[in-house]
Image (tube, rainbow over all chains, first blue to last red):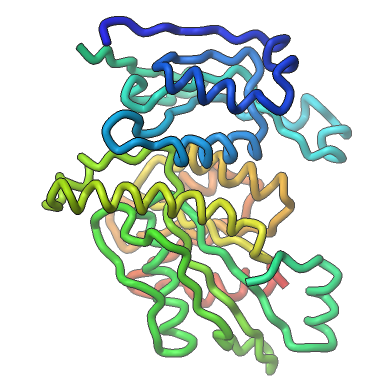
Length: 118
Length: 208
């Protein structure tokens, strides 16, 4: 691999994918792409994505995923969030763990080291 | 174990029946989950739950210990403990080889570890309360910790964070308390058994 594709996925596309959203994300990651989601995933979706990633782990080819996001602040949704208990993370970066080699949180910034495997 | 019982059923059992709490021990690899499960089981029934190791993903299947009796205010409380494999987003067999495992053993361990993560996630539906074990010597604000806690909040599963390894000089449990102010955090050393009484009190208070 000599180049990395960073795909920015719009909120509209994510919404249009409906129940296929996580399969879409996993398929793109398996292609080696790094995704920047305009709207992140709920905690349940994150855990389901981890489960799907583990199901896809291939000892030599695919080792899993790395993801970085900012959890949504509850107060932004006010009383409705407390009723619905839905916390959607804000912008989310996600990709194969052998490409995203490290994620560093520094206060209000997230740095990621992307490794190009020759 | 069966599916998680409703809050009202747990309360009725507490008042009129046999108080029984099903606890899942969750967290990232090498946080000390099995060490904690062993400490609790040893304390209450003099037995251990499973082996521990410095090599990550030593626990690769959910291991349970049932009907541990906790004595609390002249009441017997029965605890089922489920020690779960560490939740991880990636598993690289080469990491295990750094601990001296052969390539064959490392690959086998990696395969089993992926299955363990899946099993641990499924078990979230089975427990009444979760102890999330975090390593006090590490940065607690990881994606895995955030994802686990986010799921517990979304599923409304009562949660206690055990800030483990306070026996180590570099431990900073205060960082965990600051990172997750909305959760109950009990600093412990599972290895030495420090502060387990406080953990038991929290279990009774928040999981019953």
